[in-house]
Length: 428
Image (cartoon, rainbow, N blue to C red):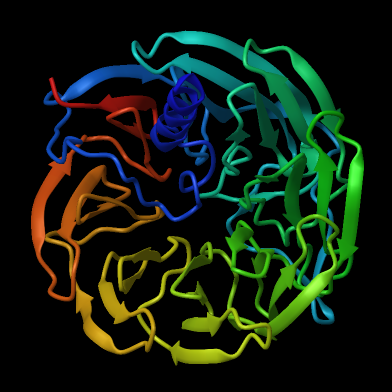
């Protein structure tokens, strides 16, 4: 009986945590009940904590502890500039590419989930960053990952770090100078058993791209598999099939599955053709990938060893926000918040082009709970959408502060990172 009670408690604890990008299984879906689906800047706000700097990383939550990252920009560093990038045979410099000529402080933060009190903050890195970032990106965009005892944070060329829950740095590891065409990084680290896995795709040519796993206790490289995929920003997905666990990585040229224990390639399929930014999702024996620029494409790929493409849909996809698979339906969202609902198994359109109540732009990815889908805009509005094959907006919740990071759900609360503050939303 004691052993059963311990197991039930452990299962309950896992269910109430949000330990990585898009939650326990990277789906964006919470199984929690009785969450608040109504709030404003004053209603159902349990607490609000100011955050210095900028970061698009989502909060991760384990028990009473929240971890996230932020980047603080300093003065110009004389003589420092970003590396040159080549687009085919011509030098490429995006007009919104900035940041490499300044000093940056990259921080790891821990807060109390009950009160919002800042428990500790640590400077992981201070100095110039190897490459630029897009003006709307940040140097703290990858979301941390935690197992409750430690937290791992990834800052691209500035390194991969491990801290214990009290803020002591356990190790740091350099993954090299990563060229991102001046757009910065966004793919988050994930955990598999005793490994931390990171995708490091580089440059338009794919020269130097790789996916790697390091020992989570020491930071030593466990395996490193070279790739030829162009720079991407999509977080890899662990998919557990009846046969095995697979690491699925989306890119423009190919969708590739690896053995997460060894880095060995298992299969590859057609790529998303555009910039791989949205995260894959999986269910019904399939994995779903998408891209929104410069071409739009969503695909359903069967996890049958042959990686057969079951269906394609070439509109309604986003440049940045990831799709969400909820029940039998896959929901795509454009960067303007237009929703498309597809039958996940067949790709059949249930509805498409459903608009939010007010014009808006979106960077955050949707989350879902209790038959509701939440999409949060850059204006600070969260639209609550009824899940299912008929589109219905249930309500609009306004914080009055821009939202760029995706929400986290844990312990009966919704955690929303605004531009300047972290909010805890809960019923009274």
